[in-house]
Length: 561
Image 1 (cartoon, one colour):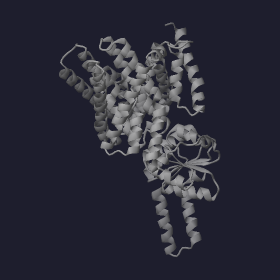
Image 2: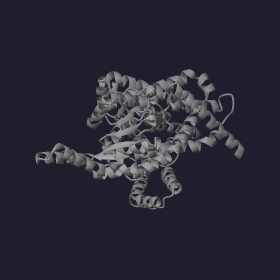
Image 3: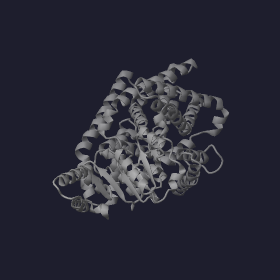
Image 4: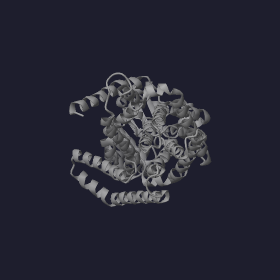
């Protein structure tokens, strides 16, 4: 393809995104559907301009890579260890149960054992890109149901390797099945071990050296090098590049450079992920779907129903509540992008005939298109089942237009006290919290509190951060507080941010990230005790208050400013 033709394709994609995404969002439709619609419009199966899929596919894969890298940075190894029973337990059970059920249905329709096995295993996988895009857009990636969904997706990415190994074996090529799978498992363990060892001993010193150069361009280049290099290594080892990117994110999850890295990759992630969904839209053969509508709809409905029911029941077996189980089941019911690779490869190996392969690809693409609506349905059902979930109702569009208000991130003990004082002085505020029970109780009392993560740009914009007069960070979890401050500072650079810290060490970290003022609880407790001691010693109240005020002025100079 000539350079001018490739440039025209890129311009067409950008124009479609610029027109359709804001239009869809105006009507409350997720941006994922806008990208899918843009891909359908520019695909080879509709009238009008056609974009060459080979131009966009490599870039689109990078969108998923950067998304998994960002998710990896949200999950330090300590948290990942606590999720291991979901990764190895629920993840393995979901893939096994879904594959077995779909395999049984395929055998019932006389597909043949080998074909049924390929179809069953492949449709058991879900779309990492679609699910994570929805979770990130709604700020739910760190919610309980979000973490469970991420855990299942992690196992699915690990399971990619044996599936790719099985394909040529089922087609009658290669070595014995057991030998091939053992070799693949050993390769996975070796590659992951090398990545973690190299990352542990070389990555942080390298970043310290790069950061010392104080060159933003070099720092951004280092981030891109890390993501793409680890993704390339896992890709060459037969694993998914997305899994490699996730591992790279894990290596930086506990580092002091995490927030700057997230800020650097954000533009790449959003744009490239949009390209991924456009390529999915371009792969939907509308004439074929119309010609075999019954088959495609049947495959789509059957697959999604089987996976949703299996996941909900498995979640209950693992003591997950009905509300979270429903949300996970409906989120992961679709087919995954991995199916496009497997079904294409199976067709090359003559395992699938062309008609069935196209029907399966169309079914998977359609299921991805339906995911945002299905996720919304799961959320509404969860809200009906669980009183706590009712507090997680969406932030209204009117909140986006608030002005001169205070944003309270964390509506616990401290957040409630601040809200009461603001209300006494008729200062408008809006509270965000990740505890659905707490939000439900606040809303029942008439407080403008909503379920949301202040560390997400989309959530902050939905509560009018650009027009706010100040933000108060009162959350307990240190990482959540750091993420919130970093995100607010990027979104509203001049907004005053007052943060709560547990101790002097956290005070220093939050100040470096961008908090205008940090109030350590230990210092305030000490001052209260000192004031009580001074009064007991006979010092009059005015002198005590003057002493405390002087100490606070010296200690919290930035607060006064």
